[in-house]
Length: 377
Image 1: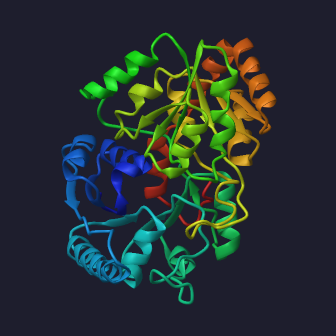
Image 2: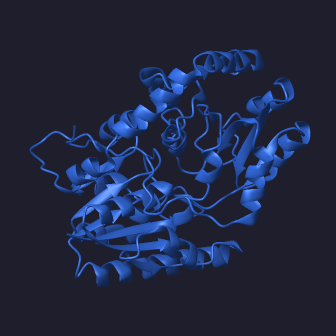
């Protein structure tokens, strides 16, 4: 089958889309990828036989220029979709923003609607909330709706009145290349971390992640441990670093090279909190039913995990016995690390089993072969 994957976002910031493209290619489909992001970097991380159409519209400047670029971006995307769907069988969108940008043109095609976050709706235009995109309209007629987490599937079915529960495609990574970065700075960082029990957080730095309490571990644990946060720096994390100087900050590393750091971790952190505020256009339930990429990235290397007591984290940790969900106090976190230490071999072995038992190819194959007379599960 010929499949057009459209991703109106920086591909390097969305590992699940990289995994999707790789999986579709591994299944033997002819894939064309439309995406934003650095073209050279993207070409290095997707299969060579995947056709790449790169779009990059400036996303900084005044509100006037941003608004102008918003409409320019919509026009370009719609033209690309129209031209390419003349020779493709299936259109697969990856985010809510992608659905908004293509809009009513989606109704012309056999369309798989994938969502990375839990979103009830999104503004039709930036800088206003009066007019909405009506995402449920597209979901109700889509060939399939895809989300990364069990609870999100049922919430969306209820919100949008869907006949079928959306497919669940977990955020497990699948890259066509091995971890093969030649980054000298990255190699130097690995040398600095060697010989230590690295407690690692990797991901975005935002306030709905209770990072400060985890940063405090750097001041309470013995020198055998190093607490490290890896991601794109911002004021929030730099402010935390000032208060906890033993915390190690590692700059953002493009996937899959970031796994060179992941694989040396001793414990992986999953710090999530429910939020009473939407934050961007996401639902307040988004963090409560999180679907972390890092859950599978840690599991790949048999790294036991320390998370928080939210369903999207606690349930997979407890059900699969791959880590501990802790209360947010320094004493509770230290006690949880002690539990991980005492049962490290068991947690590590279970993490590897958890990673191996999920077959992305089977799930993606089932989505593509969707039969509306069958249940999505």
